[in-house]
Length: 236
Ligand SMILES: Cc1cc2nc3c(=O)[nH]c(=O)nc-3n(C[C@H](O)[C@H](O)[C@H](O)COP(=O)(O)O)c2cc1C
Image (cartoon, rainbow, N blue to C red):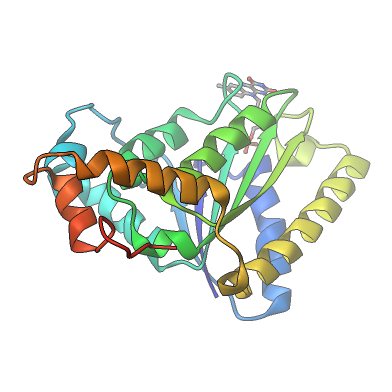
C-alpha cells in the first residue's frame, strides 16, 4: 500500500510525531511505503493567482516544477495523509499554499480520475483551539478532489513541542491515533468496496451540467469531454 503524506510544516514537532504514530501502526498491518512531502520545503512559492493552471493548463503554472512531483505522489498513492499544525485557527500558510496550487484539480475544473478511489486522513495539532476548522480545510480540499472517505484527528496538545506534552495526554493521543490508523489502513485496503459519497455524486452532476454549456475551446470542457464525462461515463 502506498501512502502520500503532506506535512504542513518542516518542523519535527507534535504534528510530525502524531504522523509517526500513524506510520508505525500502519507498518504493523502490512507492507506500506510512504512518500513524504514537507511544506514549505517542497513547495516554497505562494500561488500568484495567475489563473494559468485553471484556464490554460497546469503545466503552465509558474511553480509547476515543484507542484508536479507533489501531484504525482498524490495520484500514485492509495491513501493520502494531510497533517498541519494550527496557525491562526486554521492550516499553516504552507498547507494553504499547496491547496491553492491544487484547485485546478477540484471537481469544478479537472479532477484526476484516480482521486475518486482514494482514502484520506487529516491530522492537526493545536496548543489550544482550532483543530476542527483546520481539519475541515484539509478535508474539504480532499472532498473537492473526489477523495472517497477521509478520517480526521485533531488534538490540543497544550504545548509547543512533542517533548513538552504531558505523559498521560501523550498516551491518550497515541491510543486514539493507533485506533484511527487501523481504520484508515483497512478502509484503504478495501477502498474498492466503499460506496461513492452523495457529495461527490451531486457535485459531479451539477458541474457536468455547467460545463456542457462552456465554449468547446474551454480547457475544462475538453478534459471532461475526453474522459467521456459529458456523456454517461463517471470517474466514481
Ligand atoms: C504562528 C503560529 C500560530 C499558531 N496559532 C495557533 C492557534 O491559532 N491556536 C492554537 O491553539 N495554537 C496555535 N499555535 C500553536 C501550535 O498550533 C501548536 O503548538 C502545534 O502543536 C504546533 O505543531 P508542531 O509541533 O508540529 O509545530 C500556533 C503556533 C504558531 C507557531
